[in-house]
Length: 196
Image (cartoon, rainbow, N blue to C red; front, side, top):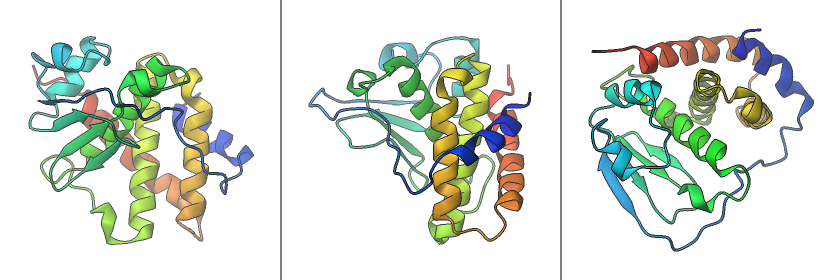
């Protein structure tokens, strides 16, 4: 079954009013920063599985800055092309899977940067923000499937999608899912294309 189709069927069983957060703790564990560079990333960000897929992803994001620090949540800052991550050791449940999921979600946001796919800025309105969250999460689900980890993250993706469909207050949720899943597929294709 197509991953996006599976997510669209699965999210309806979750209550969108319940805030679902990633299971991590904030600790004083230090700081690292690096340009996303496939040659330096294994040393700078050892928590990311370094595979052919990882090299392809990183090659497509030259110039993006990644920082891991004692932050409350992961985030992407499009004006700076900057990803903030919570370190893997701060995750209390499935740290390997949840760290990778967070990284791929934020990297999916970075695919929309003006230098890449140039999606509308998510800070223009709540509707645009919600759509961007839906795009990033559906793209992250596709990427998790590519890593062979979709089944482990399926419930989280579904809850996240249900929550943002609720927050966006969309009158036609199916149309929004169709639109954002198309954009997620475009992002996925961009992120996984080889440039060698």
